[in-house]
Every structure is written in C-alpha cells, then in structure tokens.
Length: 251
Image (tube, rainbow, N blue to C red; front, side):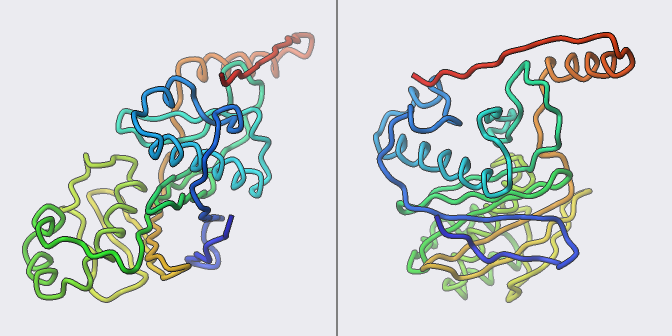
C-alpha cells in the first residue's frame, strides 16, 4: 500500500488516499466484501479488482483509526459506495466518506472526514484516450480544445471521473456537463448547487485526480433511524439497558 500525497487547503478536511496492486484473494480474507455481490462477477479479473479494492479500503480505514470489524459497505441507487456500522451495532461515531477505483492492476481508495464527499480516479500516464470518445466527455469549447490537444485527454478523463464519484451520482452526472478549467492542476468547479475542489497529480506512473465537495457520503437505512431513536430514549432513561451481538459471515 502506498499513500498518495494529496492535500488541498491546509485548513481543509482530513483526507487520505492510497493505491495498491491488485492481487488474487479469497473472499474469506476480506471482511468488507459481500458474498452476494462477489458472486455476480463473471471474470476472475473483476473479482480480484473488487476484493483488492475492499482490502485496501480496510487498510486505509485502519490507518484512519477505525475498527473495520464493525463496518459494512453500502451502495446508493447510483452504485456509489459508503461505509456504515453493521445493523444492530450500538456505535454512532461519524465515519469518513469513501471512494474506490481500479485501473491496470492497481486499486485506489480515498477517505475524507464526515460532512464531505470524495472521488478518486487514476490511469497510467501512457494511456491514450481515443478521440472517438471525446464527444461523449466534452462539448463546445472544451471539445474543440480536446480535439486540438489530445495529449490533455487523460487528465480530463480522470478529472471528470473523480468529480462524478465525489458527486456520488456516477454516470447520472453527464461528463459533458463537467467543465474542467484548462491547464490547472488544482481548481474549483461549480455544478448546480455544489462546489467541487479538484486536484491532479502524477504519482507512481499514474495520472491521479481527486475531487472533494461538502456533502453527505453516508447512506442510511430505516434501521439507522430506529437505532437513533432508541439511543435517544436510552440516554433519557438511565435505568434502560440493552445488549446486542452483531456478527458477519463471508463464505
């Protein structure tokens, strides 16, 4: 695991970014993997990428100072991941928002403190983006610029991917609507009522883009609301106590 040296404002939110090689793993070695999700992967390559990303997430969370045995990974309706306490776990500390990515046998993970969202994307520096996709990722002056400066396409590609992830919308945020300022390695990008900060850097043979924005990176479920209400009642009544045991099985 290698830490990626990403920093925005020195007074900004805490964040950590890492990359690690994709390796062959069994699901029993990765506690944050979900057996039902892994079973859907058709190819061994996709399975290895997924499990390597989840294992890297575990290691990143441990670096953050979090006990991962109490956590699970959830996905929202746009497939954006978040971490949450296992149902029935009587712990309610704020958790960081996350982003996970894979490219060319490497996995990427980014964490940022609660109240923010984050997106990370990386591609090899030697990767050439086909001109055939330029019209899918840009329009207007930006498209014209890309057609005349194809060497900049990689940065545009990873930048737009990072912003999509930070927005937690995936392809539901059209990349053609994301305008990347030309020639800036660090910039701010307004989209509707959101403001994204974007940083690009070259590291370990990769062009890496990281985008952050203020927002909610946690996906709640009905059980969360019930647990919050129960905890409030417990705190209001000193004589009320309850026990609960939560277990996880990956097979």
